[in-house]
Length: 409
Image 1 (cartoon, rainbow, N blue to C red):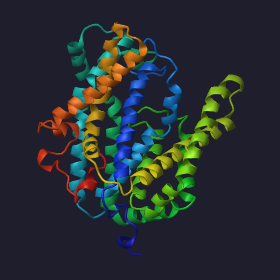
Image 2 (cartoon, one colour):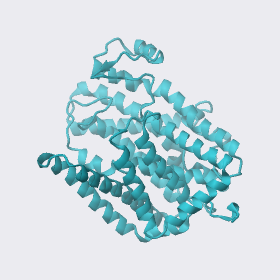
Image 3 (cartoon, one colour):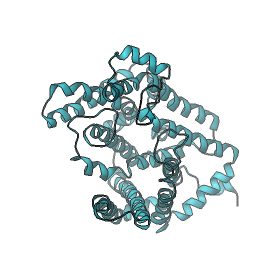
Image 4 (cartoon, one colour):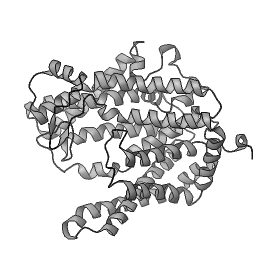
């Protein structure tokens, strides 16, 4: 069979507004999630002295699938511009510029205040930001406690950008050196993502990764040793690339949207029951732990299918809007700025001892205002745009022919 006649990963149709809006919503959830990290009991760069477990159930509702959904959408977006045999050199250059430039700029300009306030809170550092910045740029590794050290410089929340670049380059290399293999692999995968296969095979992949890798490779976001995360995020990215041009799978997501939503809620309740009750009254049991990981993976995948199915159902055939266009361009700069903004605000608002609901509201509002103000400034200044992953001003006006290339950054 001629590989060129097989299914392509890239669909030939108008802009996918459902994926645009899901990407916007997923990044929005991520921003609220990071605000929540200040006020729950889990480890984070800075913490409120009034942190509690109150918001943890809500955060656990989105925790299994929020990042996997973003990688899947990024894989879908990659299918729109990364087609074997079509200008791969230009694609590699463009994607590297759009991802690596903001990553490096973020690591050395945006992220340092996060690490500064972290050492202020966790190490009692008192020498001021200027001296700390010098130590940051010198890769000072002397901030250590509990047999671990703060690695400087760091990318903190921008790890997502690094991972996305690596996955995109790996796929581009396959498209360049083995285009026929890539096309056959996509067609093989699409053939299995039909009917019940759409539900079963991705779940099985996520479950096996969790059962086999999680204990040996806990999450680090350090790229080189993060094999469990690579397994699940890489799988989500590949699934997105294959699903982008496969209409039967999208129709199945739409028709099964109630079913997958129900499964997502049931599996979430099962996982919550395990973590809230099991540890209190049962001894450690390997079989039960593996079963929990399989159910957790089912929750991940069914929630993603439900989100994709409902977005497709609600937005298919709807008209575009200026708000969608604005947020699609702004969401990546929002992502770059948000964590630094919320950490600076959350740390410096603590001495005011405001009522907790007011404090949380001000952190959210301040973070949102910082994101909007930064974007409004950046989008107007030509030399700042590439530092935040935006196209040059001349190329910033999307046309119908080019609009599909803006799905992911």
